[in-house]
Image (cartoon, rainbow, N blue to C red; front, side):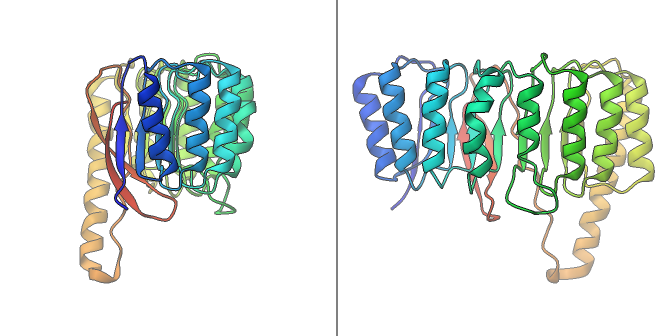
Length: 308
């Protein structure tokens, strides 16, 4: 059966729409479900969660912008995730989860067999939530884990919490994309993240836009990319107190590294599998749709157009 997508943004969902969504989920005829910013009753949210639990086709679920608005809904979502086996990508950006919400979701997230991409940006998280998130980065392929993580705009996380995350990233065997933009990290945490990047064999994209960095951080990253081979391909430093010259130097060095890798792959011929490009999910407050490349835990990929 061909699978499709359901995308609705910022609407009050009618009973008929909820029924259509639930029927499609239960029939496993939908691969992408986005109800970003939509209004629905607690009863209808529960119906959708039961549909998610029964679906064998759903790969991407977008509940951004307050759809998961209470601890009761968080519990319903957790139960759905425990039963679901197909979901690869979960967007909860802009949900008031707090640490208690992550405690509720953690069991389902940590045991889900397919989940590889998670957006918890602007979810009012703190150190306890970060501690649990670190458990989603298994070291050395011990089990499947996250390849993409967004933690944008969670200012309640302390320096200790970010330090814990940096250590987990350094030991992660799978993480490829990490978005930490609009958190008050500062140069100290940026230095720890530079060590994480140097240690990681997989991290390709690091977004540090608007995180309170200065030329001190940029110089550390410049020294790293100049002197140590890493997997990093994209480093976002916009909206920081960093000179354009330093940003350009870093960008040029990262570009050179990617070009050299591509040439090496071509020289070795067809026996080498091309490096998989990072599945970077840019987040935006605009209502325009964006093309998003998602990657499954089995190495499959699909191109989905969704509103972030």
